Image (cartoon, rainbow, N blue to C red; front, side, top):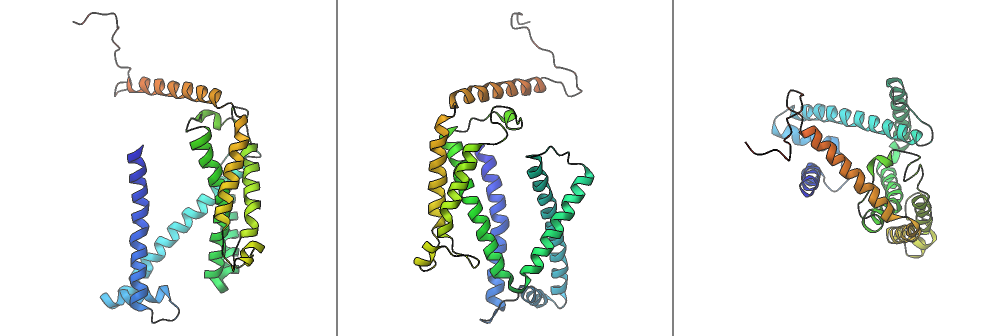
Length: 268
């Protein structure tokens, strides 16, 4: 598990860090103290290697941007399908995915056009909003995993709306909403600044409010959960999965089951 984490983490981190360093070098080499034009900077540096190379770099960069945008649209459509499926069962057929991708693309296009006049400020506000939404969610998940259930989950039950965990986790939802509401007076964005943030001269302390409020409330509500009973079910399910894995390992390469030794048989 540790190796999986570190290989995934460093693969993601290094993939972003070297581009951030490259962006810093480009900004330092091209910017003259005024506004920084990313496209012009990339083209100028490319042409500095040899004439015309800047246009080639921009073409390949646009191809990469198209592929990333396509993945974002597809990921957004899957998220939309999952959200609808939480309320009403949805089969993710080809037609359903096409409709949700189209809807996601149109919604993204309208948002991009509306934000284009002052993109950086609007994008910053959007990132802050996403951060605000994630703060109580993170608190609930961390407390549930490390404090309440200590990593013991019955995976199959998560996909069963009438199972152990139910369709909706009311404790988590209540903790999330209360934690988010407690953060509102501390918000400080270009769209809205809470009264406490105004009194502090624009300082945003919402992170230090949302985390303890949502996490602490969830810990209190979760005291009524039969954690020991859930753990027994989770461990029994894990043992069953391990046994199933052993049965698969016992299958020979050509699909026939490998011969099993009788424990009572003598060694030839």
